[in-house]
Length: 112
Image 1 (spheres, rainbow, N blue to C red):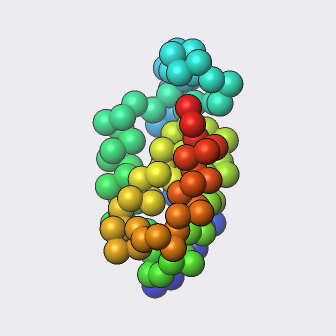
Image 2 (cartoon, helix red, strand yellow; image 1 turned 90 degrees about the horizontal axis):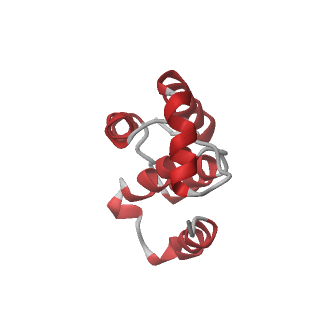
Image 3 (spheres, rainbow, N blue to C red; image 1 turned 135 degrees about the vertical axis):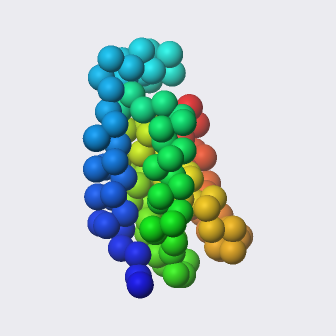
């Protein structure tokens, strides 16, 4: 079954919105010294979602892989950027030099 970026984005947004904790979001944003918004989801909670991400959204090819990374990366919250990075590393077979321009984009834009 093909993975579509809209499905992937809906999954991440839905899971993150369900776990959003505004009381944690502001301190996380302040700690990271960024204007980028946070949901307030801590690492252990994100890890559970990322395990589901790997099971449910395995890209079949490079096109799906890169489209998924880009779709998640465009989302506004820091945790969604973490999801893009997780999606990028969860399929080792697709981590090749062919994706270097995309990885460079993530590194440059995510130089937190």
